[in-house]
Amino acid sequence: MTNATSAASAATSSEIWTGLIAGGITHAISGLGDLVGEEVRTTFISPRTLPASQVNELIGGPETDVVAIHLGVKGEATGHILVMFKPATAFELVNMLLDREPGSAYELDELALSTMGEMGNVMGAYFLSALGDATGVRLMPSPPTVMMDMAGAVIDAAVADIMGDGDDILVVETRFGTANQQIHGIFLVLPNPQLKEVLLDRWAKQ
Amino acid sequence: MGETVMGVVDQSTATSSISVGLGEMKVLKNTDTTLACLGLGSCVGVAAWDPVARVAGMAHVVLPSSQGRRPDSGAKYADRAIPKLIQEVGAQGALKSRLVIKIAGGAQMALSSANDPIFKIGEQNVTAVLEAIDRESLRVEVKETGGNRGRTLRLNAASGETQVSVAGEPPRKL
Amino acid sequence: MPSVMIVDDAAFMRMKAAKMLSEVGYSVSEASTGAEAVDNYKAQAPDCVLLDITMPDMDGLTALKQIREHDPNARIAMVTAMGQQSIVMEALKAGAMDFVVKPFTAERVIGAVKKMIG
Image (cartoon, rainbow over all chains, first blue to last red):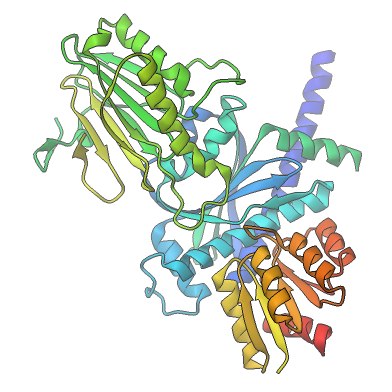
């Protein structure tokens, strides 16, 4: 009896968590769509728990080249958000947002870095605003930091921060893209364990 | 065997390679297999080699200090990882006095301004690894640390050869 | 010529807003952190301010309060991707006259400025 009850309530909190996350991601993706002026769709959402030793295997392996925008989650709980693109896609995004000819950006100069950073800021802020509106929990993104290197290298500092609390890492991996897949990327959320607890707790009290 | 790149055996294409993940440690004895910490950013890869016993060990260090943290099984914290690495290669016959230690990683990956405290972890990891090695009265033979580029560190457990590579460049002997 | 100070850490966003406003005849100045915004406001007293929230070296909500403390009649609109209701309420309570959620259109930005200084 006890086991059945706890299993049922565990399933419920997992459903609530998935619902909250999906709402946040839908909002984040719509923010990107508004910014680029095109419809952007979510093609894959997977909230799951991974052994920390395997987290840098995400995004096609630790040595895959990526451009990543990091946002720290601040406020009543903490965590990390990473928006990641293949370098060629990132340059095309910069060209689109700066109304330049396709193919004209090929390096991340100061304006391109700022453009990528702002794109990450819009997605992260939209994600956290939706979670905040649904639960009443105040969460804010830190200003963005842009990186370009191997996927393992751009992600490991965020994973390190969370590994201080345990060897299992909560990961929400979302893949998104425009209808023609000209722009596609990954929106990765790494919440600290207490972020999930605080959101579920406050959602229940609303 | 791997291809030769600039006079160095490219271990990335060797027949057998074992990835040492975040917070993990692996030890091999006289095997033509390469241990690899792939895509080190703020993390520090530590390679230890005894050329006589032909024992190779590698640790993928994630955080500087275990103080106030739960005990872990592997190499997550610099202060625990170094003594444990020496103990584990020792269990395979390596002598502490013969160990050749090389380290790589500990970068700060930001291209734009680093806006979160996590961007200090790399520097803290390097300091903590060096201090832990010093406490064992050992020294680091070669290190390639800091900067703002990610690295892969490889150690071949038959030859003891170590390589470091960064994105978009061929591997170099470390 | 009425003057508008655009405060945003992203050069990309400052550039977009500056272009939209200068095209319709406003004189535009820029700041990239909250602290810089407070200093520039005291030195230049622009007619109104467009103020981002997420910035390094003092966030926009803190800057809003400091500028309003210096000048209780300061005309400030928040321009941010953080559209969370509790943040909108906090900004309006602290004296913000408008709240523009990014990404913005030219109409919305010009509308916010007109609402503040006509």
